[in-house]
Amino acid sequence: MTNTTTVDSIKKQSDESQLMYGQRLGQELVKKLKGKKEESVIREITLEYWQAIIDEIPNENSIKRPRTAIRKAIEEAFPSSEKPKPGYYLTSSGKGKAERYEHLSLWYVTTSKDRWDITSDNERSKYFAQWEKPSSEQLSEIETETKTETETETETKTRLQITLDEMNISEMQLDAQTALMVESALAHSGISLADFVRRAIHVYAKTITGKVKQSSEDLTAVSTEDLKSDSYKTHPGRAEELTRRAIYALEIHNNNCTEKAQKWHINQTAIQSLTGSKPATIKAILGNYQTRIDDHNLKHDLNPYDNRKGNGRKIELEIDLTALVPDGQDVM
Image 1 (tube, one colour):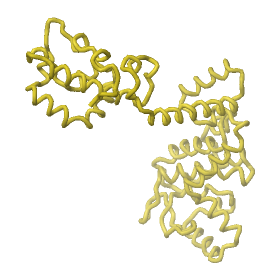
Image 2 (tube, rainbow, N blue to C red):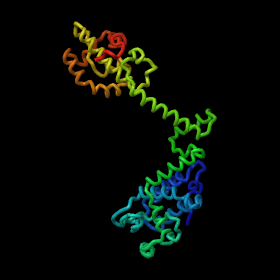
Image 3 (tube, rainbow, N blue to C red):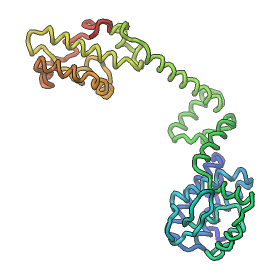
């Protein structure tokens, strides 16, 4: 084989897991195969990358993940076809798979080196004929090479569970920014990556269970002043309760006004000004009160333009939510 690829580029990097190595070479391989139709060319390019993996990972069990990864890359770039295509060969191999045409590179991504010298459809027909009653070893290889993505993911998850203490940051497949943050945090923490992961999981789990517990709490007895303070800022029920109180406050205010110019149209912007909650959050909550709000605005003949008071008048300066609705116990 002629070496057409930089040797260093197809070597396994020190920070690469075996799966990541197979994924990288798979992506590089399909780029090289684009537009190639001649079997001799496809064979040479494929074996150049596949031989690199075999040289790096000679163990049959260890090579399973990278082999599955490289085959997956090929299958995604060159999907099987029901009709003959240049650069494809006819096959029915694979447990439960129908007869189909697959890209020729898949023929060569195998540890059965006797297949590497079979380079025509006629020779492949003879080769398949001897497999009419495959041995248990042959069946094992077919099933291994046609593993589903789900099986591969399961293996990866099992490996992560077993080798947490041996894991490095690159194997966690984090985005670049997150990886840098983790490296910086580890440098300052003085603990191992495994302990860091365990502690992070504990903290996150505690946060989630805490929020679940909070979401079931009744906030009606909490004062509006406390609810608007930082101590309740992250409470999952805060925005809902403040919105409920703000609607009630606006209703009380408008019902007690003697002139229309004193009244305020109840809408998302008005609620946001009184509660300080995020617009998107308020919008979602107001859907539950829309009929009530529409009826009130109609009753007082109010529309959004009525809130453009001019002269520097602002709703939060004229309506004191904390004073008007000190808590949520009497809110209708």
